[in-house]
Image (cartoon, rainbow, N blue to C red; front, top):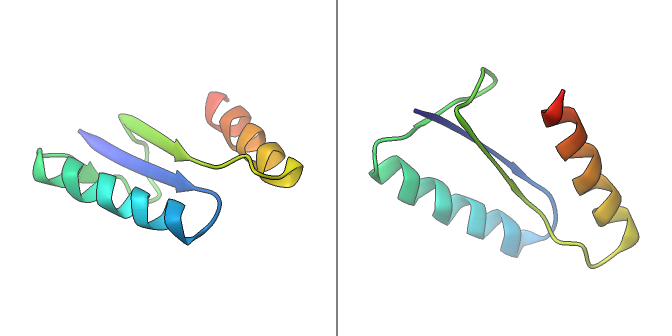
Amino acid sequence: MKVKFITLGCKVNQYESQAMLEQLLGQGFQPAGNGPADLVVVNSCTVTAQSDQKARQALRRLKR
């Protein structure tokens, strides 16, 4: 299975996404790169209205 991460937010989010990716790779997942993915993880924080809006936009794009 292929996995893709979309990370929005601070360095903590980037660290968390990397840690999750490493765990999934250890379980046999492969990075999707720019291609299609079987699993997409959107890691975001909504501390500000702008970050909240970016997260919603990313989810809308994925839905299409």
